[in-house]
Image (cartoon, rainbow, N blue to C red; front, side, top):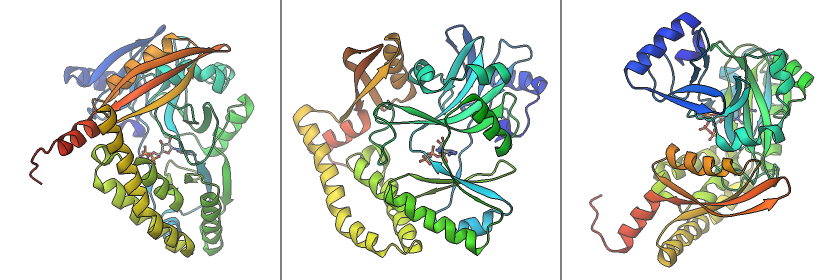
Length: 382
Ligand code: ATP
């Protein structure tokens, strides 16, 4: 990732100019803050990075880099973890990078938008004030999860009826490597920032450590956690591992959305489930998989087809809580601008103490048009 390595302030100004000249930036405003999102990889900057152009020199919130997945846990750990490392819970939510600009504390999405929902709710989720007073250039990587998420359907593990924040990464404006874990821990602790749970620490990845990792994976599987992220004490390398159950849960939740996700979504999860269950010696889960897969796929697809037949569209309804009612309009506009495949609109709103609860419908355009076309008998060349 270009912006993870080193973007000196001077270099950044030049790169931003190049990105602008190529039409790969979008200037946005949130409250008093002005930011510029990088819309495509360009000039050594990654899509999703965010610049604060009104600073002199300008500053950069680096894009959040994709984390490589290991499917065979023991072998992956043996080959790719050398020294001391930790395992943290992989929280099943959505990613934000929290940074401060012109007095605004902003939560940026992977795409580099200030998320109207999360930014509105940040004061409920954590007190970032004292952290940014001590470290004004901090960038906090976090996962936001819970039943009140505007982006994800029900997660297998219950985090909150509303939403909760789990911080897991600390870096700095300017695109350097993430801070060492010990420094991150101390800062989060001092400022009371809620964290993704730490599950295990090992001095080295020997046979005993790998056995502990496998036992941990089984435990996570049993309480329906999404998985773990493996992090060396030093350096920026991270590995992700997802429990077998989560793969089954994904298939069950998304069985009706074939057109949205493509067949590869299902086969990759089926393969990950089988490799995971075999490695963990969870043979009983294989039987559950064999019996459950057919009904899971069939029920999901039938649910979606019934929706199309009855209402002419495939949709998902969600309910979120916001502090400022205007954030709901911001969220609907954000959902519509961030995907051409989703059309969102507000269904209802009601007061909820100091908050407002808002119902939102997301119409899934690709599934709607694909299934309509199949059902009305359109000939298809495949
Ligand atoms: P996923 O792996 O959840 O399907 P993705 O395809 O976006 O999502 P990556 O791009 O590899 O995956 O990113 C890994 C995701 O894991 C990030 O969205 C990050 O926010 C999330 N995550 C959850 N818990 C942690 C944690 N404890 N440490 C680091 N990342 C975490």
